[in-house]
Length: 326
Image 1 (cartoon, helix red, strand yellow):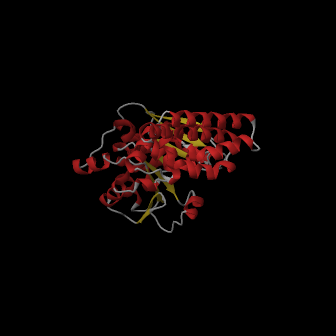
Image 2 (cartoon, rainbow, N blue to C red):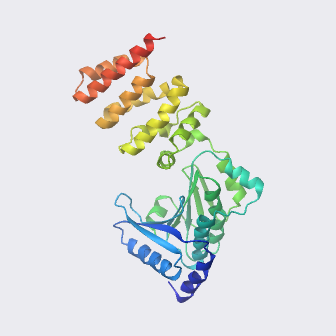
Image 3 (cartoon, rainbow, N blue to C red):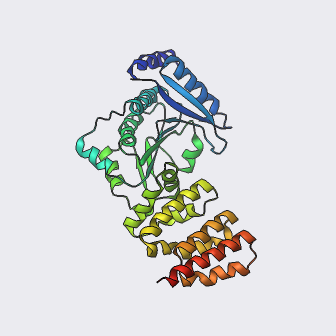
């Protein structure tokens, strides 16, 4: 951090209406120490900024989190320093100046959108792209922005095939290179096919407590999203639990739609762990019919532990009781 950058940070301290907190997630990656030192210097020269340090061994690359939905895999220095400080201001003041028609369009987006923007410290165009995208994360709770310095973190840049900056990615479907009009990006966000939502976006929504919304999205689309099936059998229980909550929302309102998960889940049944098997059997019991009974009976006689067999027995009983009441 240069003397000029330190002085610039100091002048920004008075712009914050109150003390604000950012988080830095540290890993075993050696670049964690550089991010830690940057954040400590930032807090020293702008005392209103408090930095919460967290160690997370489950993630590969360290990052700085601003607010709820802005993530920096970068040392935001040089031309990227001012947009970074503006991001902190946005998270502090929640004051977004946007044309009303654009604001309404962004606010109407109901599908999770994980944006990934590749930048470089000396890029003359990257700061404007960052500034254009930052307000979207404040306007709409379903939009997140991950900013990655492709020179500081070349590994993800290589994986994503980044050849120039700025480059913006929206999942696996859309890519923009160079300075792109924000209206063009907003229109793509607003017109996404919700059924193409990826597993990572669904996981993000579940972690943010939006399980019921995911269920409603599938009810509105009258389709079980392919990526949702991956989360239903996820090895991590909290994610699987969130998916189960979304599944129960669908079962309550449209059991025929819910039944669309039965065949693909049975195809995965033998390859998932026992805890996930128990959850899948519960789902079969809640939305299955006599077509799945033979498969459930094969679990009773198959090479499964007593808990799995008991879950299969309960599912059979639940289906028989429901079918008998019709």
